[in-house]
Image (tube, rainbow, N blue to C red):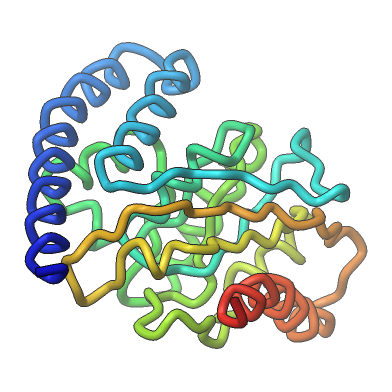
Length: 243
């Protein structure tokens, strides 16, 4: 009986989510044609809050004392499911975009929204010319005061654990001197698991850890920086698994 209730609830939540997304998204894309997205950032945040609501997620934010909301940064986050970018946008208190796989820009509705809002395409095939373009677009975004969300695992978790991190984002942070904010999504794996379809209403906590300054770091420091950030992100998830 419980399984049937969970299935019926998920069908209802998915129906509401899909209808809302494909009704609201065209309006925001149209606005972005005529207005700089910064001018209607509040509408984008409202969209994300409704996406969270219709999926059954209550978003809570925790900020470490050393988190600096004024600094344009790379937000390095554990990747759980397709709701991650929207839940993060509910909690990060500054104008933010993200690295997005180039193939995602071809997804109906979602891809157009990501392209129009200025997300940085990450090439699926890492050719030198494509990587150079990504580096340039990333530098332009940071130079324009836009922080970026990066999922350094490069894939979504299948078991709730944090996989090994790729070095690309950390190398760019070191080269450009961009601060890094480790971010942990706690409760997101319980809410929705990649590979399944059931939605489990509950609280997803976005933990914004202390900002890490990369100024003066050398390329030899990148591996340790990567592992340090991974340890910080993983810690709240260990505590979650104990409860």
